[in-house]
Amino acid sequence: MTKSTLQRFAKVAGFMYLFAFIAPTLNWVMILSKFNVNNNALATANKIIADKLLFSIGLTIELTMAIGLIVLGFALFTVLKTINKNLALIALLIKLVEATISVAIVLVTFIGLQMLTNEAGLPVSTLEQLKVQLGLMINSHTAIFSIPMVFLGVDMIIFSYLFLRSRYIPRVLAVFGIISFTLILIHALMYIIAPAYAEMPINQIIFWAPSGLFEIIIGMWLLIKGINIHSQEK
Image (cartoon, rainbow, N blue to C red; front, side, top):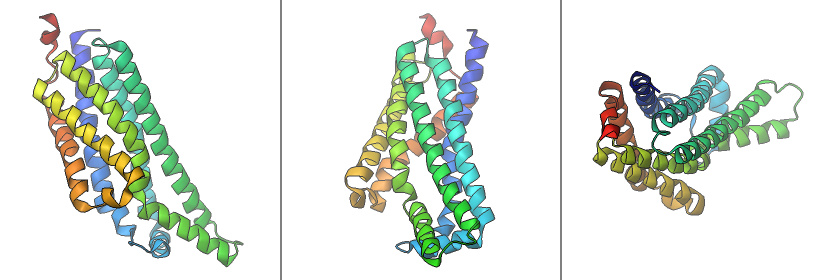
């Protein structure tokens, strides 16, 4: 593979790093959080029904994010497979699992929305149950996405390790990536094992802020400076 091709894939990875941080953050802050009524799944569902279009836009963005994960995975695999093809392939496959689970979550939510949209003929009791189930999914959005986040932590630790081996980017940045996504992995497992502790605001900041900062830095670095291909010639 030519150096120019590697640089192009590196820039694609840089853009997708930024997309992976900006898209879910804006989607939650500007769209999905507007439907969340804490400890009241029925009220959440009623807000969704009242503005189905906005909620559908939020789901579409989440679906786009899943596609973005695949693009990011293939770009990183292409850049890093020369360092260790087997490890890069493992990371890519784990990234595909992460994306698949994310799509499945969106699909289940979409099905619930469609069932409520076509509610004619449903008994009142069934309709209320569907509303509660959909509301619970949105109120538990972060907890549910902790499952794909486990895979995110693992695949990005591997990719960051390969960046460290490659010296394509500053070593300190690669180490920061390993640490950041180790924290993501720990927090995702915490949601499964001790959700009350994981949901504490201070823990969400401690475990998530480093990865957000890393994605911004490496995204800008790869877009602007690219990778140091000459490091492999030494």
